[in-house]
Image (cartoon, rainbow, N blue to C red; front, side, top):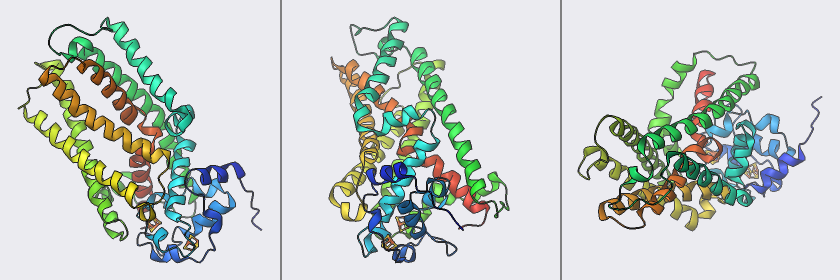
Length: 364
Ligand code: SF4
Ligand code: SF4
């Protein structure tokens, strides 16, 4: 006999973060039938709905199916009870970040509205401290030169070190997640190795193939591709800028090919983020209820992109308040890049791991 031991605190957290209607589910199964991504064998999200209603984190957090869902909203659109299972799965994923992220204090920083002032203050203090140690904690005189305010050696070494620290701690969570996935399916041993399976799911990652199977939110695939490739291009340009700062003259001129690619990437990000923002604001019936974490990620990415464009313009036009904008831009960088393992952005890693695992055990 299976003994059910509900975790009431977990269920309350699910309801707070987007799963408010989960008790309304009557287990009709319509959601699993309309979901084009659910496997035939033990499809989702009906079974997740009953586990959520029973408050069973053990069943949900190490469940690869919550990551096979791409939150297309087809199930929510067709649910006869208006339950929005897509939002419930999104809420489960959010609690997965909390469960696996270490230290969990950073998850609270990045996901609780009451902690927002501290989340902003934290990078502000650390960046100020680095500037103080570099001896440049003052607005420089003369033409705008960001290197005079934050020397490249200090900027690159400090931000790289902090990012590595944050991602190193996150890696512990990723390993725990992977081990939990294996433990959740003891009867289904992987038939292929990790790297081979990862290679086989590359289409899902690079082309977002599975998004194309959703019907309720068609513009989502375009928006995600624009944001994904815009972000990847910006990371490559940033890596080049770090090398350029070490090996030859910096900053880059406005006609440098990498500068042009960076601006194209910023444009891709802006368009993709605008589509996401508009969809969330205007089509909440289809796109589901957006919680604080959804908005924080969207807004911080938007501010990062816009402030990057403004900071560049401020340098070329020699604006007096360029350094304050630059400081704000660095805080935005912190929010998106350094807080990444604790925000919804971490889905990039968890989803890839879950897809790789599911593929390795033949669950497609
Ligand atoms: S369609 Fe709605 S009511 Fe039916 S099982 Fe899914 S969530 Fe529950
Ligand atoms: S949101 Fe889309 S992918 Fe996720 S369970 Fe519902 S129908 Fe399936």
